[in-house]
Every structure is written in C-alpha cells, then in structure tokens.
Figure 1: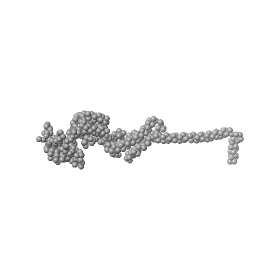
Figure 2: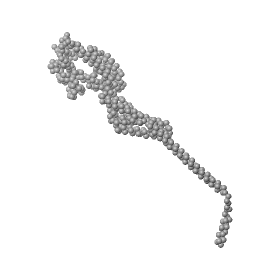
Figure 3: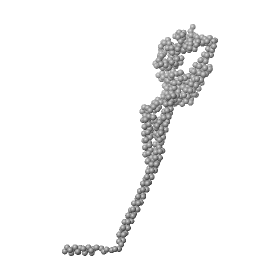
Figure 4: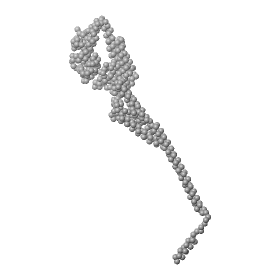
Length: 470
C-alpha cells in the first residue's frame, strides 16, 4: 500500500513538472543585460568619483599653499623691532619683547580672518598692530638718543638746574633704569615714577642745558662796560638796560628760567639770580619794576617758572644784569680817573693803597651797622680763600672760607669787634690798623697838583657825612 502510495505521488510530480524548452530565454538575457549594465555603470561611477576626489584635494592643497604664501607675506610685512637691542636693562627689554610677541600673535590671528572674510575692519586692525610696532621702534630710538645726549651734557657739566625742567625727577630716573617701563596698546613708550605714569613722547628732549648764548651775551656786555670805563667812558644806565632787554628778547621762556637759576661768575656771587631775588637783597628798583612785594621778608620765585610770566622775568633779569654791567663800568671808570689823578705823582706801593682802601670801606660800612647786608659783605675786597660763600640766618652772617671755617658777623655786636673781624678778612696792614683804627675814622686819598695827600676823615653822622679830622 505504501508502494502504491509512493508511485502515485511520483506520477503526480511528473504531471506537474513544466515542459522543458531549448529555445533562448530572452527574459533572463534581458535581466543579465540590466545587471551588467548596472555593474558597468557602477564601475564608471567609481572612476568618475575617484577622479573628482583627487581634483577636490588638489584644490584644497592649492588653497592651503596660497593661504600659507599670503600669511608668510603678511608676517613678512609686519615691522621688526631692531631697536629693542638699544634697551640695556634686561627687565625692560623683556617688556618690549613680550609686547612684540603679543602683537605678532594678534596680527597672525587677524590675518587669518582677513584671508577668509576680506573684512575691512579686520584689515584696519592689522594696520593698527603694524603702526604700534613702528611707533614703539621709533620711540625706543628717540629714547636712546636722548639718553646719550643727556649723559653727555651731564659729563660736560652743561645740564641746567632740575628746577627748570625735572622737578619730578623723570629724566634722572628714566635714564638710569630707576623707572618702571610700560608700553601702550599703540606702542607708546612710557614710564611710571613715584606712582605717576608718563608717555615718553610727551617728555622727549625736554630737559634744559645751560643758557650758553645768554651767558655769552651778558659776559660780552660786562666786558664792554669795563672796556669803556677803562677808556674814560661812563655808561648810561637806561641805555644799558635797553641793550640788555633787547639782547634777551629772542630768549625763550625756558632759556630765561635757566638763566635765572644759573650761578654766573660775572656777577661775583655764589648764588643764582633766583636765590638773590628771593632774599630781597637786590636793588629795590628791580622789585618795583614788576610790582613785587615781600612776604615774611622773602620774595616768591615760583612765578618765574610759569611761561606766561616770561616778560616779567625778562624785565627783572635785564635790570639785574644792567646793574652788573654798570658796576663793572663804574669800577673801571674809577680806576681810569685814579690813573689820571695820580699821573706823575709818587704814591705808596699798591699793597699799601689796597690796605688803606679796605680800611676805608670797612669803616664806612660799620659806621651804620644797619647797612651790613649780604650785598655789602660781598662788596668788600675779601680774599677768595677766606670767602667761599656767605649765608645769613636770623640776621647773623656766616662767611665760609675754603676749608669751610666760618667767621660770624653779627651787626648787633660792638663796632670794634666787627671792625677787627672785617680787617682780618680784607687783609688790612697792622700799620693801617694803628693809624685808622679809631671808632669812626677812615681816610681820603687825593692827589692835588702832583702831590699825594692822605687825609684822616671822621664820620659825623648821616647828615654831615665824613669830615676831615682836625
């Protein structure tokens, strides 16, 4: 039964099996053709993709090369800082180097943005960075040149008093590495001194040297006055003032301030004009010319350093140096007259005449102690070794010699004491001390009709003056 059943199934299978055919299967051929076409298409697509990928990377590489070239060109255009080597202090040099590196980094960052965006604002920032480096480099050079000139002026003793240009000590500290250096965003070189910041461009070159042109003019005027006096020509004070004022007319406010704070040899003083002005010991007419009055016995001098007062300063300087010139002329004129009067007259030796002249000056001075002033003491013929300087404190004068030993002159002391001190200082001979050493005794030296006369004189008071001793 099972066999029959098996055969039945086989017969059924055969019956359902399709009929074989040996003709071409066009459908299969068409499908294969489509697959082949797809494979061919895929192959062609892969080739095309490979070719496109290479082109893309080529473009990228080219773009990178162009970018690198542009960046190198940008960086090459960035100014260098060759002058940094002029900065000697290591700490200050590091400040400059750090600023340079920071600006380079910023420039490169901006260059990359500009390369992508062509943003004009970015380009302007790049130019600002370049300017900051050029600016700083130039200011370093100026600073170094100024420092060398300042040191040269110091070595040659040509620097003016600091009161005319450097009260805060800027140059002294900046030029000796005693100031904190800083650099502004735009490359301005700066320094901090005593907690106050300064831009160097505001200070560059603004120190003062001696007023050599003004000094030369004054010395020429003084020598001319003496020369005229020695020829018997007496100068007119008004003309001398006009000439002096005109000579200072071209001087700047700074030049006048330097002159006022310079110790000039020609006036036979050890103090500057400013110091003498403050003391009140100058010609009263000088103070009147500018309407100046004293405060607590002293005269203010700060006004001299305000440029708007330069004409007033010029006025008092012209008056002061006019007096110097007139004094020189008067002295030389007196010497000329003396020579004329003493011509063909037999006189004592020069040292005797000098001693007696000194006696006369001392006695005239001490006859009225109120006239013992700083100016009067400078007017005495005191040996330079015995009078290096004169100071005054509480009405008492101290005369310093070359070894800083002092002689105190107290106008309230006895006349004999003052006379003895001053006689020693002016080198009066003992013979003249004995002859003219009376309380109010002096002498008068004259020559009449070829004869020398030495007349004793006695002080009779301010109304009568000096009269011959009978």
